[in-house]
Image (cartoon, rainbow, N blue to C red):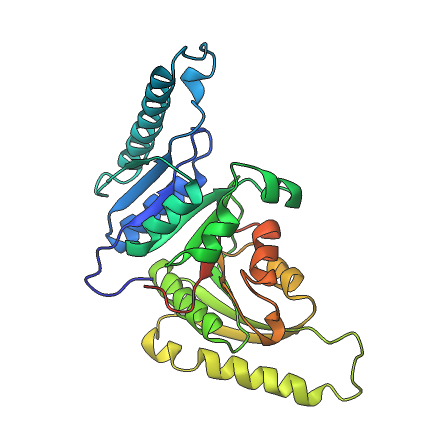
Length: 293
């Protein structure tokens, strides 16, 4: 995600509900590990908590002022949470106006990563819910986007990351991020190529599976030399990519995927696999563009 000497912040979208802090906690921990500043971002919207029970102000100016006060309160509470958790982390909060997707996309231009929370909305809620920004941000961000579920999931020891590989440039970038994250956490990497047979299964599946193994080996080649402390397991698994990756990452520190792909991940625009794992994964999902900037 970052380069030596890089001071680009970790950007985190702040949920106005103070009971939902998993994304903020993940972002604060990541900023502490990487010794980077943290930039909590809140986009002014419907007043929260203390303002919900009050009468609607009679004028547009007073309504805007109420929104502004509510937004500042959200960010102050977020900053206090981060400082209590990691006193050494520099916090530079941003209160913005406008469309949350546009705001976060612009923030991603100079960010190491953008971190968002997820409430595991249904597909209908994800498409039509005004609070949902994860999918469009993942599709258009200029840096990796991390979607952290609520509530906290259970991890296993030894700790590991799962990364989906399909031989594309996007999945190669995802492998880089998986190794970088694993090195920071003292974790392992499981690199998976998921081969999904077509509707008309061919008699001899040996050749396509061998090609898949070749792509997998080529994609992960060289990373262990760069990160010798990271143990690597790479596997070819058969099945539907979303189901296989979701199951494999159930107790992982994170699931890393490219935002687009080919081969076993055919059809990714924000790829169908990226969308699918976002809906069903029980661990943080890290979506990586082909060339994080």
